[in-house]
Length: 369
Image 1 (cartoon, helix red, strand yellow):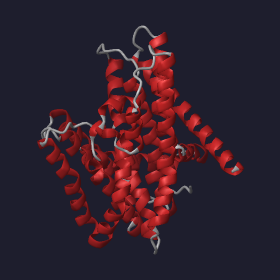
Image 2: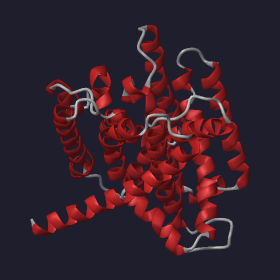
Image 3: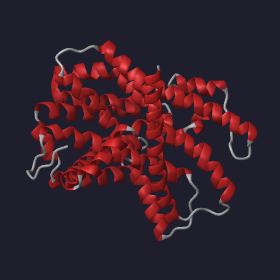
């Protein structure tokens, strides 16, 4: 992680700013959003409650950056390598993504039902074997009775679906170039939205299908292409004028969603603008951070990024099985908004150290095996 005073950061630092730092900030934002949305907070309209509302909603939009980063991170190695071994790639994805997910879901399911048996007043409801089956088979988004087992895992069927069609998307990108590829991805993402609206399909991310997010994933793939072929273009995107453009895109996406300017499907149609705007803003912010922060602080971003997937997997069950019973037992009234935000920050730190501990245990187990 070298530092530089010139306008464009060194090529070897591009991915640290455009992937690592953004991933670290995004996972913290997602944890804060899920924590505050699930915790008790006051319904009285005050300045702190308005502030909490904006923090929660803005933090929630950072989930879109994970689609971008996934497309970016998956594509870059394939553009730099001359040969493609899809069998090795699929095996690594399976071991890194699917197996930890299965372990987390199985443990969560078991603990939830055990806790319901012993302390039914605090942990409700219990779940059938079919709920576990839908999570294991990535059909969870189509089975609403099981959503409350871990509402944060709506993301997993989406990202796995995008991984499955990734070879096809990469082939289209290489063969037809950036412009045709983005047009293709926009049609692929928005046509199902339009069709399912006509069929009365609910417009909620809890019940969404992976095709809805192809355009965001494809945007990440395009970033990888630019990083590989024209790294200086990515550096230009880090400048202040593009930060301002990002604010504009983000603001327009908010207007589309708030006033349903594109009809019922506005909640999805606006996502590509929201994700591009937010990503470009974060590029500028992270570039400044990379220039001015000390190496020790930058290393914290690196560590949080390395543990981001584990943080994502464990924070939902801990909220459901730990915080929910705690609130019901010790908080009669609602928690104040400012304490809620402060405790969300503390909870994020706790999740990092928990994920780090799990990673260390995993390393020790692998060494013994």
